[in-house]
Length: 131
Image (cartoon, rainbow, N blue to C red; front, top):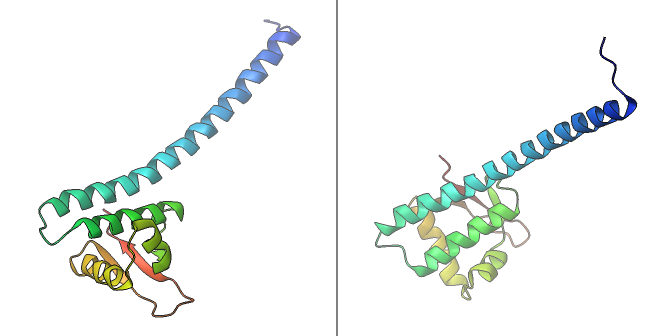
């Protein structure tokens, strides 16, 4: 029979723990990459589609990127619950009229689904078109 020394047994136990920890870390990294890929896919699909869409301007693009940013911060859960004041601050839109016109147009053009709350204390819902 093969006998291991105490040192060899400790090294083997250490390596097994290390492998388990590495597999857990790998699993978490995979989840994070999958989550990032979701935002990247939505963003890439938007940029690909907007190139052919003459109705989309720089304000629409800034607004959409800001929505993606807030969606990512909130954990990429569809729908995004957001207040216009937060999105406006991130997208550098100063006018409420411009913000509501652009978000309605993005919804009308099929890039998002926008469900306004019409209440100052309740966030609006924004759904992204995920593939």
